[in-house]
Image 1 (spheres, helix red, strand yellow):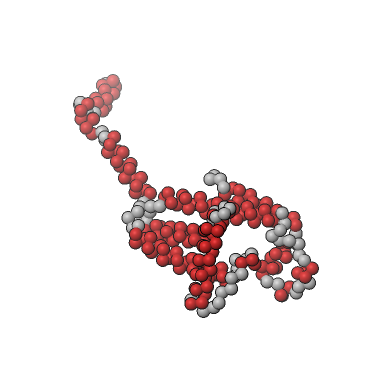
Image 2: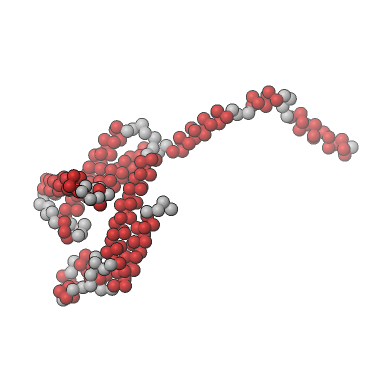
Length: 230
């Protein structure tokens, strides 16, 4: 009886199987249909939403405007044909924007080495306005694109090397103390309240050579790491 009880479930499982091989082949999914489903799934996974596409367009335009003419400004004999004309165009835009939008006369004084000036504030505002306008035009002309995966990769590479170049150069200026020199006699005699925030920072870091070099080494190391993908 026990042996007979074991045979009944085995027979039931066997009866549940297909009777012929043709029905099994018909019920199995075809390779073409599975490949098409995988392709549709990958396209759906890489499709960006409208907000993401819009924000990427704005970020792409603004970052390129802010970083250009890098790397052309590091190439010899290119500045005459590209960098200088682009600089003159920037000056014209900043002067016009300062006069007609902010109702002030902007002074062009680049050798100060600081980005905390009226010129730079107006230039950043001009970049912002142009980026918004370019984003709207780009959106109208390129509404059907699903994503910007390839352009995103190129933009990341460009921004990485822009940042790496700045960090390595400024780090070298600290390792070889030139950006923050030791406080001069007139700086030491200056009243604390008369010092600008930037001048106070320069005095603070320049007073310690070891801290100056330590900060420069860390900055250079971070810049070098940005040149590698991992």
